[in-house]
Length: 115
Image 1 (tube, rainbow, N blue to C red):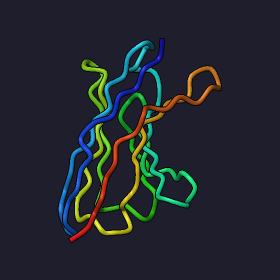
Image 2: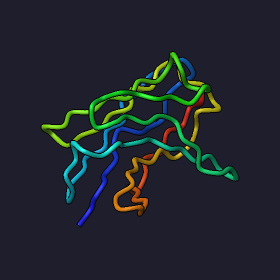
Image 3: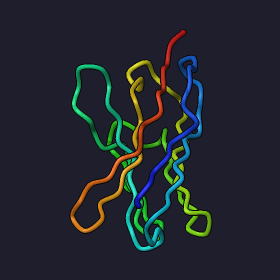
Image 4: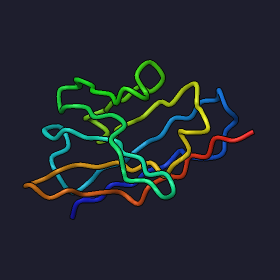
């Protein structure tokens, strides 16, 4: 079955960095676009970044220049390098994929930006 497992979140000071990872299994990873969303308390889940199977990235305006999405098709991994973190980046970050019209999510990883 489709599984997405995120890791790499944590508590970081403003200006700090983290590398989020998502391990995928149960589907042909290389042919699907993958994405990262985030959800802050009391807010809707929002798209942060997406990447096609061939590696073309797309970013939300709020994270352009600070976040980098990448993937390793051989390892079935997708990454989100998050730099220059701000308190407003605090959220649960979710890895996602749409397969056969069905949206799948991982369990999420918490990122907290605070001094």
